[in-house]
Image (cartoon, rainbow, N blue to C red; front, side, top):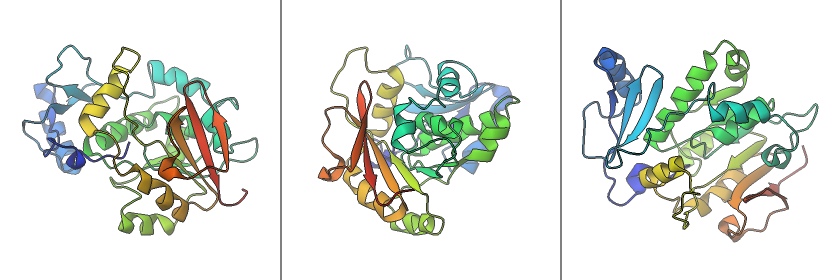
Length: 267
C-alpha cells in the first residue's frame, strides 16, 4: 500500500488519532504527536482510535463496519503467520527463500504488513516501508505489539523493522535505502477492485476508501530495480497487466494472484 492520503481526491486531511476511552487520552496525544497526526476530530471519513488492544481504524460514515485493528498475535492473521513458513507459500517461493538461504527483504508497499510478516516468519530480515500516514500507524502499532509478545516477540524483534513513513519512489528515500540495499524488494501496489460483492474483504474496502489506488504504481518497479541487489517481486491479480508493462523473468502463480519475478542476478 503506497498511496498517500494527500494523493486521493477529496481527502485533503489526515485522519486524527484519538483515544477510544478517556483514560487513554494522554497516551493517544503522545502517539499522535509522535506520528505527527491531528490530535482532535476533523472532517476526514476515518479516525484512528487508541484502544486497550491497540490502534484501530474506524470508518465514521459506515458505523456497521467493524473497526480495523491489525493483530499478528491473535485471530486469523496469527493463524496465517503460524502456517506461513512453509515452502509451498507462493510468496516464499517467489522471493527465493530456501533452506539455508534467507535474503534480506524490503517490503516497499507494506500496507498492513500481512505478506511481510509471512516473510519474517519464514526467517527473513524484513524492513517495512509505507507512506500512507494512517496505515503506517496501524502497521507500526501491530509490529510493536508483536515485538512485545512473550511467544513471538524475540524473533519479530530480531527480524522485523518498520521504517519511517515514505516511499521508494521518493528520490531522497531511495538514495537512503541504497546505502543499505536489500537483496530483494517486494511490491504489492493497490489494484482497483471492480468486484463490489462480499468477496472483496471489508478491510480492503476500507483501505481503498482511505488511500485510493496507486496511481503512480508504474514508478515503483524501476525504483525498486535500481535499489535491490538481486531481485524484485511484484504481486498482481492473476489477470492484471504487468507493472510498468515490463515482462518478468519468471512467475509464481497462486489461486487469485501471481508473483512476477524480476531477476537482476542470482542470490
